[in-house]
Length: 359
Image (cartoon, rainbow, N blue to C red; front, top):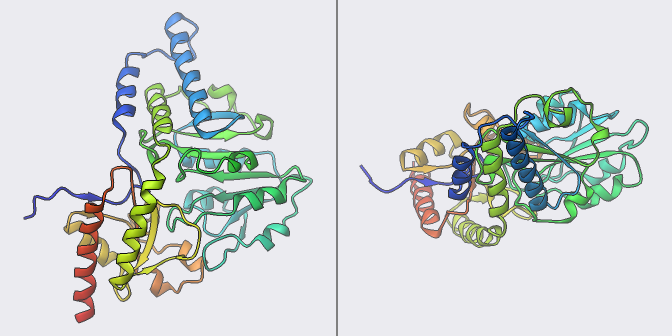
């Protein structure tokens, strides 16, 4: 049995907590008071909470409001179902959390590269009552980046609202995106923070219906201060590493194509950290078993669907056949990923593909 450490290439599902974020959480355990309490301990906890709120906003280049949530899924549900809008639109390749919360929303088609068809955006009736369009900035299965700026320019002349799921994107990646967004979604555990914490960024709280409770009446429940402080540290620390990831992914894809693999949406603008790859003739389920036994963690689809090995809804929406879609896995890079990790993955890729091809 191999004693080689496991290779983790599933950072799009979740990434390890950064040491600095973990340290901030441990320190925060001493601030045990409820931030809503009026006494000195409560006021100190409240000050730490508000400081974290402002730090995360700065890291994201956001000048609006921020509501802490339990993660991206809750933030998505609040934005989709409590925003003061008329018609709602979502793209066909949104995360399953968006499709569940916006089950009755109009779905907009995408092209073969997974980018929303801007002609359909042109046809949206943006005004009176204002419409809401939800777009995942970076697709969590393919890494394809949506054209947020052209979409934002099309809605500027109306009172329409744009919801951008930025869970997979590095803070500060494109400063134009926050300027065009009315809501933005961020998730702690995608960025080296703890699971169970995220945020809904809101341009104008008047566009949301309040429910009472904490977070200025927009989200009930005592805030998880240790997780929030770890979240803030992670959002500040994770800036600038996408450039290194781009070089790693380029090297991976060059060697993978040479080994018989196919890149999904190879011609699209994609995040450096996520790639979807097809191994012709080999089902994704068989690939996942092979890689896992070899000590390598990858996935198929998004984290919410890969556990059940259900077929991706994203790939068929891009025009891929059901058979081909079932042969695609996702590889996602984190800040600790290095060339030796990719070497190990490529060795096992070649081994499985050559064995199946020979059979």
